[in-house]
Length: 255
Image (cartoon, rainbow, N blue to C red; front, side, top):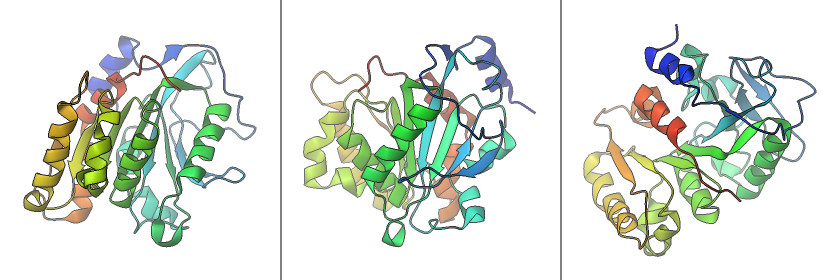
């Protein structure tokens, strides 16, 4: 059953927008409302969710969420990837109005290769009707670290970001020096460490980002007190308010 919050959002027509159909249709279309494993030449294989109504609305462009898993969820274990990040919420809410891609890290120990991710994103944008103003990025653990890194490298690409852990990228001195690159990117960060460990460094980075000259989007930090690491890594993806917040974000311009 569709949540009332999602049904209301669909009624006001705010989640898929008319636009030029820039993406070529996939020769092997993915089933709508399902999560399936896909692959593309010279990029990472990925788990893909295509929204219901995608084929029936050929003039619509859709938001895209890219989720990057932690280092203990790489390789060919599709079942493990199916339990990580937003996968469980997507399985229970098949009417979500966006594309979601969860690539597999092919690097040693689950490391992320940004060049491969860039090629994958190029492939997705050429294949599916993606709204360039609503490309979102999130990741947990090592994926959270890659989320921060990719956003810092391409601050004008993403409409919003949610790094779940991996905050050492911006809490180190070099990261603090670069945090103003993200002054206009809406960020809801989530800590997977205990609050005592996670607090000081990331709050310092958030405070620095909020003070950036001309900044318009101060970041937010959320901390889960659950003792189970697996719950802390996925908690934010099970919150309807996070999905609504995400889908409200839009970049005025993109690269």
